[in-house]
Every structure is written in C-alpha cells, then in structure tokens.
Length: 517
Image (tube, rainbow, N blue to C red; front, side, top):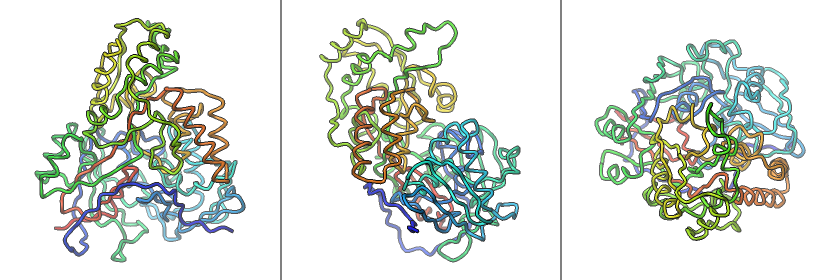
C-alpha cells in the first residue's frame, strides 16, 4: 500500500503574508463577509458562483481540504491510501464526525453524496470535477473504497473541491430550507437576495489550535453588497470585517487605510473572451449569425486584436500575468512554454477578417458584467482594440446573478470569469472536453478529448506532461476562449481578523479565522 497524505503539484504562487502584533487566540464574535451577490442555493452539488460557495463550503465537509500550497489535507477523512497504480483508493473517516442533528457521518453518506455529484442531472457543474470514479464501495462504517476507471494520483485533491461535499440522504428535500450540516457551521437564516447567517455547529468534529472544536467565531454572515465601493465603505465603517474581492482600481485606497489588510497574490484564475460555437438560439434569431464563431478565421482574427499587456493594465491595474489562450498559467508545472502569447497585429486581424468574409463595420454583441472585477473593464478595452480592426463591439452589461443564469453557456460572445483549479485535469477537462460540465464554448475536438482522457490516467510524469502540452496547444490554436491574462486576486480584512491567508483558488476557510475583541 502506498500511503498518500498529501500531493504536491509544485505550483508556485505569490502569497501576501500578514504581519500582526502578537495576539492570543480569542473565540466568539460575528464575522461578516461582503460579497457581490447573494447566496442562490444551499445545495452544494448544484451550486454556481463563488458567492454561494461561501455558504456551502462551511455547511458541508469534504473528505479532504485543499491547503494554500494545493495539497490535500485531512478533513472528514483522517487518512487515505491507494493500491498499485492509484486505481483503487481507500479513505478512512474520522470516527468522531457527526452531522448537525447528532447522527454519525458514515461511509454510506460518502457513497451517496459522491454518487449524487457523479450524476450530471443532480450536479450539472460537478460531475466532471471529482476524478474518474467508477464505483464507490462501503467497506465498513468508517471506511470507503473508491475504484477508478484509470490510474489517477490527484483524487484526494479533487475530493477537496467545491462539489464533493458530504450531505445526509434524508435531507435532500429540505436541503435549501433546513440543511443538515456536516461542516463547521449550521444555518440560522437565509433569504434569497438577502443576508445568509451561519452559526457554529455544536457537533463539529475538528479542533482548533486551542484543542477545542472549530470554528473560532460564533457566527458567520454572508452580506450581499452589489457595488465594490460600498463594500469597502462597509469594511471601513465596521459593518463587515471582510470583503471577498476588491476591484483593482480600489487597491491603492485600501492600502492607505491603516485599519485594513490586503490579502492576495497570483492565482490561476482568468477572464476569457468566450466564442460560443453552439449558442442557444432564441426564437426569431438568425442561426447563421448566432453560430458565426464556428468561423475559424474570425476567431483567429479576434485573438490578434488584443494587446495583452495593455488589457492587463486597463482591466486589472497591472495585477496580472500575460496568458496564451489556454488555461494553464506560466507558473504551473504543466505549463507549455513553447506556446507564445500572440502579439497584437491589427494588419493581420484585418486580413483574417476579410478571409472570413466579415465586412468592415460589422457589429457583435459582447455580454459582460461588473459583478467581477476586470470583466467589464476587459470588455471595454477590447471594444477599442477591435475598433482598430474595423469591428464594432456592442457591450451589454448584465447583473452578475443574471449572467450565471441567463448568459453563461448560452449567448454567442461573452466575457467569462474562472477561478483556478487545484489539479491539472480539473483545470482543463471540464472546460474543453466535449463532455465537460463547464464547456462554455462547446468545443468538440476528438483529438483533444483523447489527449485529456489519456493524460488524466497516465502515471508516467513525462508522458503525462507531454500529453497536456499537446492539449494546451490545441486549445490555444482553436481560439474558442481568448485568454489574455491570469489575474491576481485580493481580498481585504480589518486588522481584527486573524489567520487570514491568501489561497490561490480564492477559497476561504472561515472556521479557522478568529477575531480580536
């Protein structure tokens, strides 16, 4: 048996370290987090959007927890191991783990929960994000065996992600009104569109640094405040103690306030221009125009319109890294260094447009939102760059909540917003495999599918890297997602919040934060 307690990916991320005066750990208090939009669902297997993750992360546990170095650490599982070529995995559960109603969390609950995530109807965004699972077997009350379809070393990391959260089978019908928690908090109140309030779970099984059960705070509030400037004002007034994301143009303001601390750094997150090959056609729309991005020359032309350094400065105030139209960042160990970012070439863009049969002055609608810092700014920057090549870009701003429900996956042309993923497979496969749960562009490339399937199960690291390098090249050349940059991400907390750390996936584990009173 090969014992696996963590898996190091080798990625390097810039972490902002916070220097605090020496404080003794304190318990109690209410920690409030400002977010752009409200929690939409408490069902962790159906969740969409980071604002809802803040609730589901803390109501429900996963087998593992992904730390700031992208290693898998114990959460519900105390340890795990695999046999042979990492096809058969065994996870041992914490024997003290209980749901918030006092019932023991068992291997049967793990089996039920993971099988629900694997069902695309029950978890339409999650079913491709939990590894190549074939079967889940209950060995005893506290032991579960997971059999894979192929060799896969990164399973423990995938099982610490957004979707594979452990729920109680008997709670399915009431999960959005009376959720039975497996995590550090339980629900006190939730109103769609309003504040979500969580309180500490008296049955939570993990301990803090003082040897007592987590969380340290008594309450955790998720407060929707649409405008980023209003969030910062609420932070400065003491109405909230954290803001999940600060817009780049406000960072300098936050830095000047001695009562605040900026927490952040590099991430593998990005904001692509998505050229949808198979949009949903609304009644009366012209199908040929709606599917116009199937024109390869047009997509390539758009990729040459973008000045990448300039768009980073405009959209992110310089807080980003140039990208090359595929989702693996330069600081990742699987990055293909042979793919060079395109330089802006308006002359070539015009030539490609002509070859594509696109007339000068043609209008395209680009959907975006102000709900995530950088999205609308990058759209505006692109509008001016495209104008140089003779395209008219009509920007349509939508509320971020409407974006997730009515725009994403559906319209021909949009700006996206994706956070990073902990594993190389999760970074690519859901977005570019023809069966991927997050395939926004609807790309369908059999060669790419083959490479992603084979690479995922390849145990030889050199062969694996070579296959992922080929996949990145296909994605970059396809121009279905023009990715001009990888973005840094910054949160802001008051100096009363302790143990706040930058996570490259922009996760927050609030159970380990504490407040000085």
